[in-house]
Length: 80
Image (tube, rainbow, N blue to C red; front, side, top):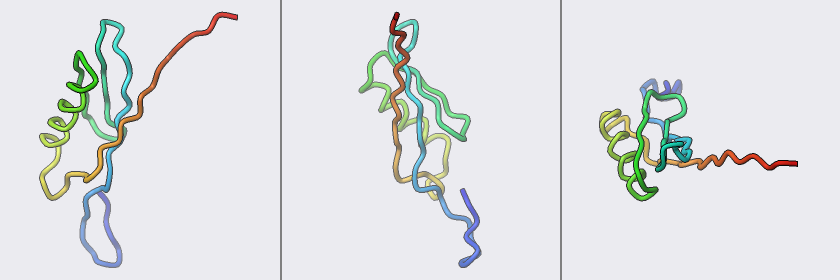
């Protein structure tokens, strides 16, 4: 959320970004950048639903971001 100096009111963020990683136990984990939102699921499709639900619970409707961006991070080690 930010303060708009020209209009003098608080406006909702346009988007929220989640870092998504494969869980060592299987499935996926996601956490929001700049917010205390964390969720996990067994499949990627289920994770997207869990993220939508978490964002809905975390923000009031007037403050809810209109875009949820997922950044999939894959950590892979290549032996040399």
